[in-house]
Image (tube, rainbow, N blue to C red):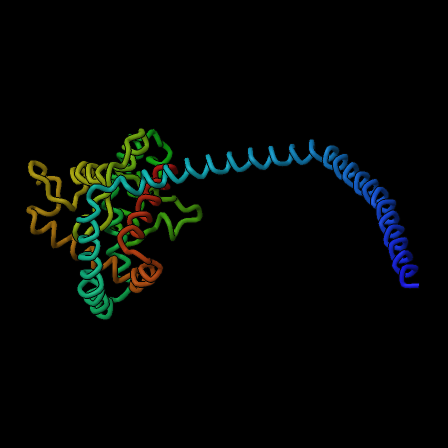
Amino acid sequence: MKFFYIFLAIILFTFQGCTTKEANPEINQQQIKTDTMTSNTLTINTPDDQKKENQTEEFEEEFNAEFEEEFSEQETKTTSDPLSGYNRWMTSFNDTFILYALNPISEAYATIIPQPLRLGLSNAVDNIQFPIRFANNLLQGKFQNSSDELGRFMINSTVGLAGLIDVATDHMTTPIPAHDEDFGQTLGYYGVGSGFHVVLPFIGPSNIRDIVGITVDAYLYPLVHTKGLENYKIPKNLGQTIGIYSVHMINKTSLHLGEYENLREDAVDLYPFFRDIYEQKRNSDIAE
């Protein structure tokens, strides 16, 4: 009987093995079919996927090229500043001067001098700068602008009481617009580069091109003393020129109190902030 059970167990074990072997081919066939379908699916999708991958790669290459080009241009502009050490120090000096000297004096000045008088003085100084605007508009071939400047000067110098009242802008049915131009803008108009940035004491941001422009314009400006041209200038020496410029700076600041403080609040780093604002504005002025 014991042998019978052993024999029966062997038969059952053998039968189970055969059954497993018969099941495996079906599983293998299903696996083969699945692999074949997957392979076909991959084969069908491969061209589209490859096309998308190629388009993605091309886009990334174009984007990287444009980014590198733009970054290199910005880096070139940023590093073209050989006087950065001096400029930073002078920016800090000017900032201290404005906050602790110019602004307090201008505030006191504003409490003493009524605003209409301060506006009149500002208009008169602007009117007397006519030769600079007129000449540089002519040099740039802007003849209509030159004509406007001539008309403004004649009207404001007569009806406007030597320029104290800006009649051409504020009291005419059709106002005559002003066209601010200087020799620095004229040089830029003809393609002269700005050169490296320079911060001037008490004046502020400038560059090599504009320093040349200031020097040339000084010969046309009646409020700047120039040797050999004393008969055509109001100040007769350098001291008088400094005195006139100081009063003009105080008067101008008194009409714009608080604006400098509001502007500098947006600056993370004061020097590059003012440098970039200045250069962008000058480029915009030249492009007009």
